[in-house]
Image 1: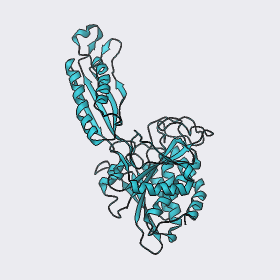
Image 2: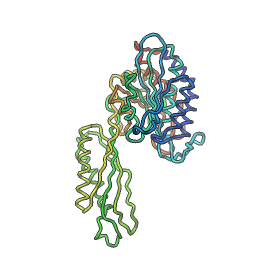
Image 3: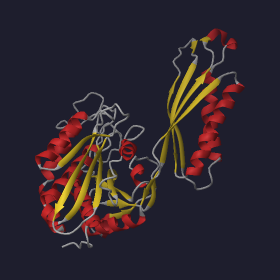
Image 4: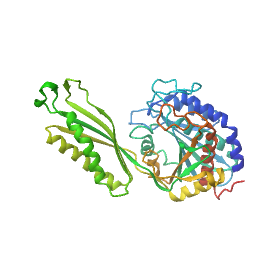
Length: 409
């Protein structure tokens, strides 16, 4: 069966490229993926696959932009249920390059590979559907919105109970990875990707004309002291060899050459792998900021938006997926990954069911953009990776729902 699955997905390569390029031309931002969801549903329904739309609601009155599809095996026996996940949202980036399929939406781009993730889960689901008489059980195809924006579409799907009936025994996800050469797959059991929180700081002073700054409370001066102090004291609070990232990427002080503003806003991120450390820093950082501001006559608002938890790859499931990867691409092309300080809302799934999140190599120095980093304006993938990722997903699902362990043919 696995040999036939490989053949079926190789034949779907052209379709997966076409789906991926369509999505790449028409990206949509987080929780706005209405046309994206409609396109996915159209492709699935054309194959006769049952689709449930409108999942992933930000609030009770909102329209969900995610969808769930179910592929049912028709062979005798009682297989289980297993989930395959794709994220479908894009980023607020203006694309450069790729004249044949460049984004047609101003300032919006699939710079994180979610178009490829979606095409591969479509391919895996359709291949399994076409082979449905050869296996029993249910494969759940999860097309979730809003991976790039809090509160994270994954958290909304969990909250809505979309995994309650049928209940998957586990879930498999993947991420295109430009630093891995095409043909390679990367795995790591246990904690893999960091918990991530958003930090929003407003430093409040008393602005005015620069010529009378002795009368003012300068929020820029407070911010200038606050940032290095936060960095150094946060690092001092972290045990040796414990991974942590504190970073600020946006500072706005809307004054002028002769105007001191009333406020300065600072946006940043905190990444951790330890929940105790995470909680300690949540308490420590606002206190540091408040003391610095008060010492200079100002005040500060420090808002922490709690984001995704740590991605925890189930060791047993990950070991099984790694073994399948060896069968698929060869032991020399299966690599062990280090922890990554990047975050992924796939983490929410791994806290309610066994999960495995692996990396798919898409880099190729011979193809422009395929070695550019994620979230860059010229990011691209080697599309020859699409059948590899789709086959890995489909093989993983079959392995997990089977009454007995499948062996490659």
